Length: 85
Image (cartoon, rainbow, N blue to C red; front, side, top):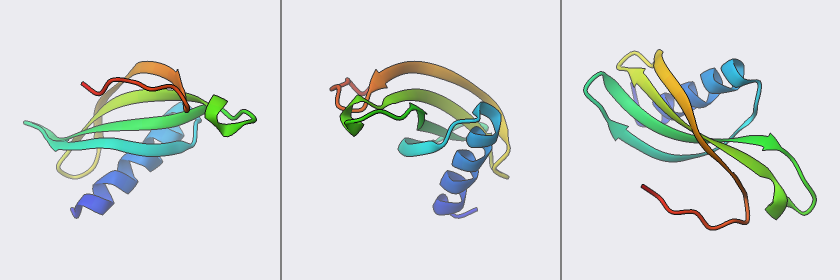
């Protein structure tokens, strides 16, 4: 799979699983089982947009693009600075 396909597949699957729209992909790394992806999902839209509530998820996909596991790692406001790990 191309990297763009992995990203789009992860975003689409996480939208189905969580019921939330995908916002951004913060990270994509090769992993032992395939790929590790950090995805930010829009949990609550607000005005102004800097107050949107974003849920951060870590997702592991196999080489075929199937999700093996996922977990929510945090929540933050779009305008809030956060430290990358």
